[in-house]
Image 1 (cartoon, rainbow, N blue to C red):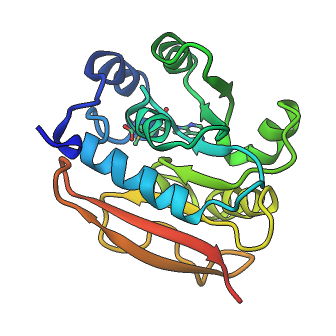
Image 2 (cartoon, helix red, strand yellow):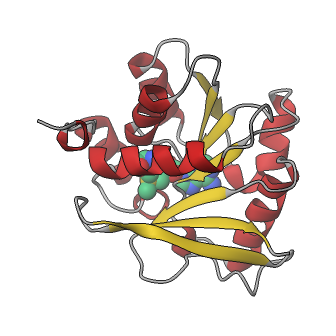
Length: 198
Ligand SMILES: C[S@@+](CC[C@H](N)C(=O)[O-])C[C@H]1O[C@@H](n2cnc3c(N)ncnc32)[C@H](O)[C@@H]1O
């Protein structure tokens, strides 16, 4: 079995999280191992060296977290943000020692300040952006870019065909680059990389 075929989902806590908040969690199925590893590769490719930890937002039960842990180099730090308290506990049980921040990522600036974090090197975002009103989405992205040095990137995944946050509508304006679609996911997953527009 190749590394991309290994299952890394944690279905039961995820389904319970979905039952608590179907809109916030999206679908009752976590990302596949293939998607998670592709996201991790995209994140480390975009990460700004020395700018701080990798920030994973909407970590769920840790499908993508595990891939980030597997792909990281010595010294890379990973921080997971999750709104659902029970999913936070599931993450802490699954990854002892992982830094998990419980909070609403729309207010990501406040979540990071509370944790004493001034800078991150990349953001991997699993929030269901299509379910988030555009002003809140714009605020979340804007605050996430404020937490990164120039050249920072948000790696966002989505089931939809278009960029889940319209880069022309956000303030500041953004550039969205299609990284690819992972077909070994139910449903297939699109991966986008956002940067501040030049
Ligand atoms: C589509 S799931 C992704 C879960 C996991 N990363 C994966 O790929 O399987 C979205 C996750 O984001 C969390 N979430 C939704 N809205 C959030 C918010 N405003 N702040 C923090 N987490 C949020 C949900 O609780 C859920 O765990």
